[in-house]
Length: 128
Length: 259
Image (cartoon, rainbow over all chains, first blue to last red; front, side, top):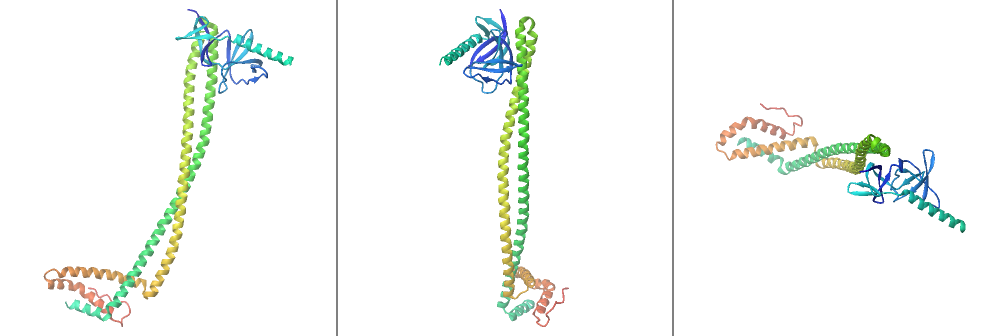
């Protein structure tokens, strides 16, 4: 049985898993500024400007951001609720939690999709 | 029998009608005096009640001010509870980050860190639940304080109303007292009697009625002669006093001839 360390999160009512190699730390009191014309935001973490990727529903109250390393870049993720942290039994494409399976979240793909949308938007803006 | 006859003759000379009107005047004046005394007593009671109502109103106002102070304390307590909650949330985040670090180290090196982080999160979770309960309790206390404040406001309003009513009653009593005094003066003028004399007459009439009732009771018994002889030492001075009262030439204090 292989165990993998990481975070168990909830995204729009669904269980998800983020490996510790991706999830770096949780930060609070972060002020997020929306980047106009994109679905992304910006924030300052330890003196560095970091991209903010919003997944899931916005939290009713200010909630901590999850700082992740995606494709060698630090990205803060908003909209995830951390349920647990630790070592979990690995299954195909996720981890087992009791009788449930938490699928590994592919935040890199999510970021790539959003970046593509942003590029398309920019191009259409330049063309017009 | 001689004593009784002499008494009857005495009253026959004065005339029943004159005696009756004097007694009526005495009853009227006595009633007036009693009414004045009752009014004075009511006035004093009313004044005491008005003072008590005023004190009550002041005490309720002080209690209302204290509830306002309690509100300020409640706000401070809620702010402190919120600070405690925020500190616990921050500590929980720290524990999660420690756990994440332990998870990154894996089974080999991170187990101890994970165990400590788990324990910390568990304890902080209990702390947060307690802080939430405490916050909810403070909110409940604030609601109850608001209710208490409303009740105190109502009670104060009622005390004010009572105080006003008592003031009105006192004013009415003063008017009644003035009217009664005027009535007394008019009554005195109408009857031409001295109130003190009338009071004594009314008292004497009361005693005389009592004596008459007792003698009537004795009439139904046997041995009337014995009864008369037994009463004679007590009745003789009475008779002498009645005779002195009948003497128009002696218009001053009567000599006490009681044995």
